[in-house]
Length: 442
Image (cartoon, rainbow, N blue to C red; front, side, top):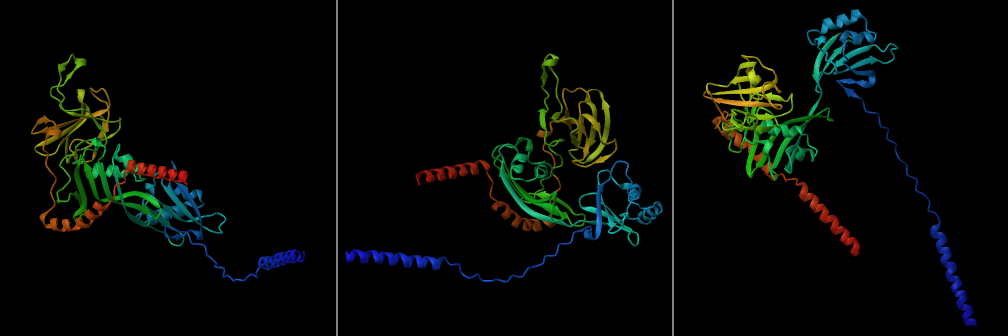
């Protein structure tokens, strides 16, 4: 009995000591007082157009139909005599009559002025430039530009449907597709006939205004295109430092440019080819040779001159409808039929890629297209079967410099990895399935 009583007493002591320990362990520890220094952050100044906008009442608007410089200032309590003075003193710097509807302008007005009279008129003819007409103290005007930043970027991909989709899937401006198709490879690659599996790599620069406003693609420094398993390199190189003229050349310093564009319409399709043995059921299957190549496109699509030359005809005649004919040299002439309207006149000189008219349906035509006709030595021929002259090659004096210039760009291009959506999606699917199996097994 005594032994059992002692055991019960021992158990009670253990419980009591445990309770005391728990009490002291739960007792809150004294808090350490930490003194902190409070940093006072001053608000950043709002600087634009070279002014601290926080010092003014800022009014922003766009030029409306019927607006003029004088009417805008009159609406804002500036007297007619003062407006006349401003216009006279700034006319050599900026013609106030050139304000365009839809363009933005800003008025900087004095704070504390009940009438909120402006001291400065700022006009933006485009995203980069702005014109300041300041009449706060003395009247003066000047033109300036917003800060521009260029950011080099890389993109690569594999064609599954078309180049535009391959770029837009990666968040790249479709404008890059037009640069590749119309400015770099129009003489060597037919972008209307890209194949599934064709691949590309591009080094380009994006343009930003004020560090944040995207202003499009500035330039393409280098490109690589694999079409039908054939590689096409392109490197931009300045061939004339005085005029700033640059062109694209391949890895062997050969000019990518040709004397003629492959097509007079961008991203169109050939609806009918040059065919001297053509027979049409509508005409009783009689032989009706087609001496041109038809490029189908929507009405109003621009038609481009395929090479430099002089317009020798810009008129309308019979089944040809409205057309333009260009003499390029003693050997070659081109003609563009069925236009909606012509943009050029007889005797006018045009450059390769200039818009000379728009797709239409004038003359004998069953749908909107341009019939592109090509003459060689006075005879109509198929342009796609001609060995057309190349553009002027890079000079021997610049060739060594060019080959050294492209070395690092070529290495950079070759090291860019392709982004292949289908493979990436399959890999993600495999990883997801593997994770799911692992979770089930666990």
